[in-house]
Image 1 (tube, rainbow, N blue to C red):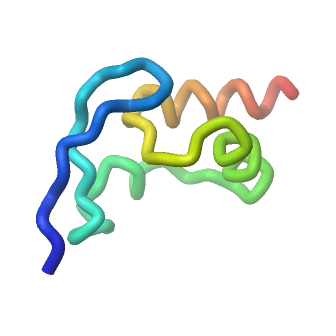
Image 2 (image 1 turned 90 degrees about the horizontal axis):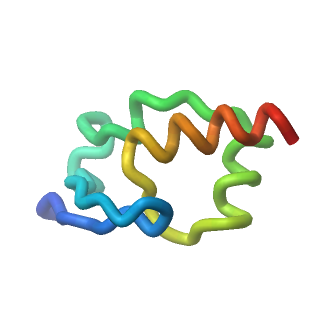
Image 3 (image 1 turned 180 degrees about the vertical axis):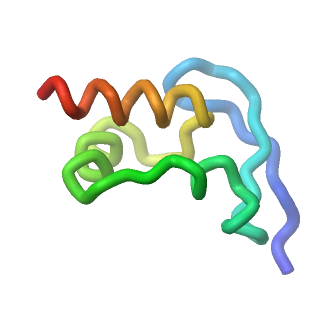
Amino acid sequence: MCEHETKSCPRCGSLFECKVGSILLCHCADVQLNETERQFISSQYQDCLCHECLLQMKEESSRQ
């Protein structure tokens, strides 16, 4: 089983815990993204974002 990993958000630099070993417990599982939102985020970032940045990027994608 994978351990949790402390990551730095590539967007804002804040530290957060990535729970890839328990993905249903990870903060990213709480943010519902449609395919357009996923593509918008992945076009700019290749790694995990913190919860706040995920929410902000979701909002930004709706303005595009």
